[in-house]
Amino acid sequence: MALSDHARAVLAEAAGTFLFVSIGAGAIVADKMTSGGIGILGVAVAHGLALSVAVSMFGAISGGHFNPAVTLGVAVAGHHPRGRILSYWAAQAVGAIVAGLFVRLAFDSVPAAVDATRLGTPLVTNGVTVTTAIVVELVLTVFLLWAVFGTAVSPNAPRIAGFGIGLTVAADILIGGPLTGAAMNPARWLGPAVAAGFFDSWYVYIVGPLVGGALAGLTYRFIFASAQERAAV
Image (cartoon, rainbow, N blue to C red; front, side, top):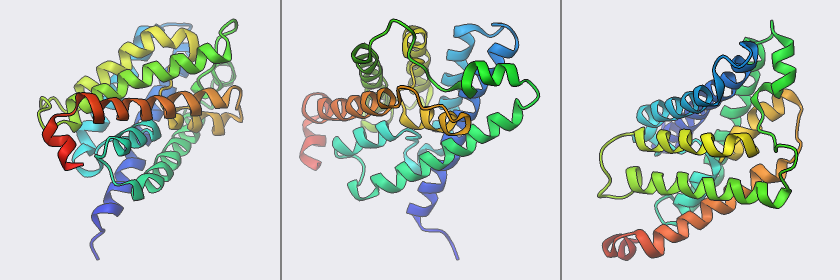
């Protein structure tokens, strides 16, 4: 029996999140393994490319969220059924946790790099206050959601697949990576955190992105969306 469209979408969200978190977190561990051979630019590019490919692969099936903050923001903007928020969140969490376990397995031979990076779990840098960390994650998530709306959600969006979204993630990491890890995504934090058993500052990676996603959804719905879009919501 063929799967329903919703079942296909949920599976696509799990698969896309698995791809994104595996490559993103794995790049951080690989950077430590090679004594900084990849660097922050390489880590940013790995995240951006992975998300670009994932959105291009699965966007037509599920919308290509792979991020609870994106799902929330798109729902707030009226472009995703609110009754499907929890199923998308569950799929994203499962995909991220499996990715964290995969990264642990892949780098099992280099325990020093695994321990030093906590499997790529985002971490607030010493000296950065909780308030600042939450604001950084919030603002960077707003930038990400604006890219989602402008390049994927809007009916007038340029057909560039996930390219603009991936570039935004890469750019966000270049500024926010040294401060908070620039997760912009509760699932991106959750997967490696569960696999590493490391939950420091968990609230930063839940509150910041979700509030940022909701705020971006509101700004799109009431400011940036066309009159035709607002009338249809």
